Structure formats: C-alpha cells, structure tokens
Length: 306
Image 1 (cartoon, one colour):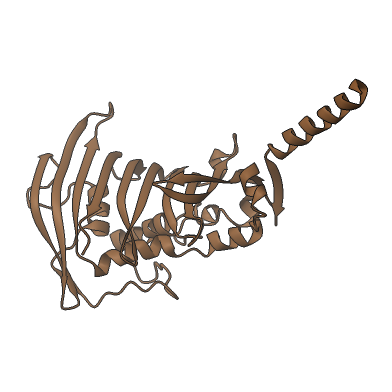
Image 2: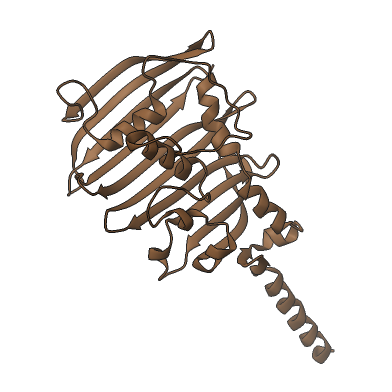
C-alpha cells in the first residue's frame, strides 16, 4: 500500500508545481510569460497583444479633458545637480467649458526661483511642455474628443510645436514609430517583432484601485538598454472593458546631440461615461545641444469633473 501511495503523492505534487508555474508562449517573435492565473482563464494572448497595439483608451482619456470642466492642482519643480529645488510653481486651476469653447482660470499660484522670465514667460523647457499639455492660454474653441482616424504628425511643424507633437506620441501612443527624432524613430515600435529580442514581456492579473486588471509588463533585457528608447512599461487594463486603468513607463536614450531619461505614471478614473486621467507624475532629466540640462519633477492632480 505504501509503495502505491508514495508514487501517487509524488505525481500529484509534481503536477501541482507545474500548474503553479509561469509558462511562456510565442506571439510572432515575441516571447511572453503568462502567470498561472492567466493560464487558468484560457486567455487569448495574440488577441490581447493586438488589443494593446490598437488601444486608444489612453489617448481618448486625455482628449476627454478638452470637453469637460475640471479643476487641477499643479506642482512643478526644477532641480539642481544635487536634486534640490531651484525653481517651482504650485497652482490651482479650473477649466471652464461653455459654448463649445474652453478657458482656464488660475485660482491660486505661487512661483519660486527663476521659474518665470522677467516678462512672465516660462524659463524652462519642461515647464513649457507641461503648460502646452495641461494649461489653456486664452479661449480655445471647436475641439472634440474623437480619436478614431487621428494620428500625431510633425508635418509642417518645427521648433517647439514639432517637439510637442513628438512628445505627445511618446506619452499617448507608446509603441508607435516617431518620425523626425534622429536615431530614435524605429526604436519606439516596441510591439514590432523586430524589437522582440530586446524585451522580456509578461501578462498577469491583479487588483488596481479596486478594479480587476490584466497587467502587461514589458522590460528591456539587461545589456540592451542602449538599443531601445522605452526601457520599461507596465499597463493595467480593466479585465472587462480593456480600458487603461493606469500606466507607468520609463524612457531613456543617449546620443551625441541629446540625452534623456523620463519616468511617467498615470492613473485614470471615470466621470460618468468618460475615462479621464486623475493623476500624472513625471520625473525627467534631459539635455539637448545648445541647451542647459534640465531636471524636472511634476505632479498634476485632476478632480471635480463636471
């Protein structure tokens, strides 16, 4: 009897260990690790990857800000080489949309250091970029939140406007090729098979802000950091709607004319039928030719949607 029971117990334990282990699958040239909980759900991995590549909910959430009323707390700090604050802006703003136009009211503002120039212009490129994404100058009319068929384009743009468009592509459509940035364009297409060898990818499930989520992680393999732009990205997708619940990512690159390292975190919330960002954190360090190095940290907290 004992001789019979021992092999049976061994087989059961061995099978249990196998069931509790991660498993890898191939999607094109991409090797993706699946957690046991994903395996238990009979998950369609290829369909999920295609869903990620075509996702528009993240960009749509930011477009929704153009048609809603909301308040924002803005905390921007520019840092010196030791990480101490040398200039900052803390403000509370309110966006008002009426008659198909939106405008911004500044409810409170406190600036330190040389955040502004003598004529009240932004003294830092990081601040200019923040303002272009989250502040409204004057009245802006005729906007909508449609994303279908719309793509970022640098055509006909130059200088600051061109850089803003490239930055928006990196922020809102990570994984897309970006035209016009030397040595970088092809390296941003992280879902293409040509980039598969540089990344470890995995799919799991966890609860984020009381929402059951599929979690897709993509991280550069050790030793390949110089061959990619997006070092790491984690996205939490609602397991029912597949909307983006949150995303964090790290971008970096170093070339002769510029270098940068940027960390971003975005959390979403719902206002009625609208998915909107509620918290955006940024920590960036960049240097471009003919410009001083900038180290900036900012947090945008959005609330009181109407």
